[in-house]
Image 1 (tube, rainbow, N blue to C red):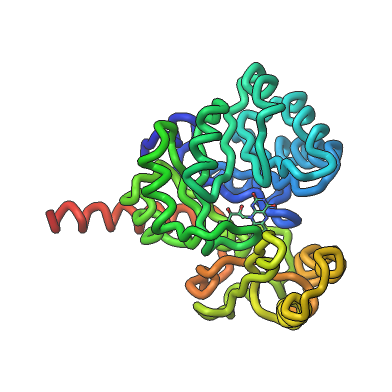
Image 2: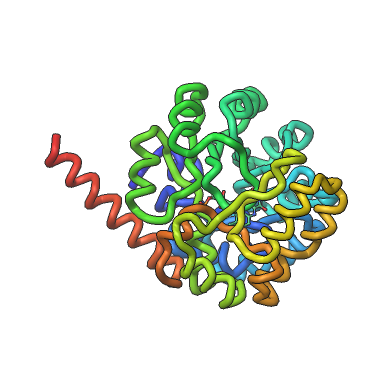
Amino acid sequence: MNTRVTELLGIRYPIIQGGMAWVAEQHLAAAVSEAGGLGLIGGASAPGEVIRDMLRDAKRLTDAPVGVNVMLMSPHADDVARVVIEEGVKVVTTGAGMPSKYMEDWKKAGIKVIPVVASVAQARIMERLGADAVVAEGTESGGHIGEATTMTLLPQVVDAVKIPVIGAGGIADGRGMMAAFMLGASGVQIGTRFVASTEAVVSEAYKNRIVKAKDIDSTVTGRTYGHPVRSLRNDMTREYTRLEAEGKSFEELEYLTLGSLRKAVQEGDVIRGTVMAGQIAGLIQDIKPCREIIEDMMRECHELARKAADFV
Ligand SMILES: Cc1cc2nc3c(=O)[nH]c(=O)nc-3n(C[C@H](O)[C@H](O)[C@H](O)COP(=O)(O)O)c2cc1C
């Protein structure tokens, strides 16, 4: 399948694995890239040298390119921004801010820059800054979210910018992918489906929680202070919601969640930890290899395209 995104990134399939904190490490990223998509290492709040080590490990696992998600609010963002240049990374996605101050150096290094946006206004700003594409991420997504749904955000961003748009949020099979294409996307970014993959170095408890999740099992915490996060309902989200309703300070709420994603990802504590996942978790019924996830999606997509052609 050739789209503006496969051409821009030189990949076989227009599928990007989201740069997920604690989840998107070298094994997952390499598996996705090896299967023909684009795997990303999630920079999150990790120091530059940690990202350098992950990138070098990824190079040992695959010859295919692996990108990095740079979290711009991280105290280590400057370091990570330098490391991606030094390590010859070809694609960077950015989150939580404006990548303006890195743009010139990244462009000089030939890096394709793809900010994640949650509104038309953000998409326009990023295009003006020189972004090569944007990921339009709907509120269905796992992790930190905006307000607009994928269904409404995607076509509006597509109409507002000339650069390619990648749809994210609520996509886990060929139907979702095809829907994103119908709304004008040239690619998709997927998070939750790849968490429940064989290669993700994530506790079995976390993966199983996603497989067991029903359609309405996710909830959003942190709206009060403008930092909404979507995760699966458990003791942690219930406690957070209670404290939020009591009007506790941002600092107190932050303290509650300190290290809680790592606790769920690495220690398998899906009761007291934060199990970030999107609304589409309810559709995910199994844990399977990244190659199978990608090839199943592509097959479904082609079948749907054929059916649509018959219909017309
Ligand atoms: C566990 C988890 C952690 C995430 N962490 C980040 C992150 O650190 N940076 C980021 O840009 N997006 C992050 N995301 C969002 C994903 O990159 C992706 O855009 C999103 O999951 C897409 O929606 P989906 O989960 O419905 O597929 C995270 C998502 C999940 C599920």
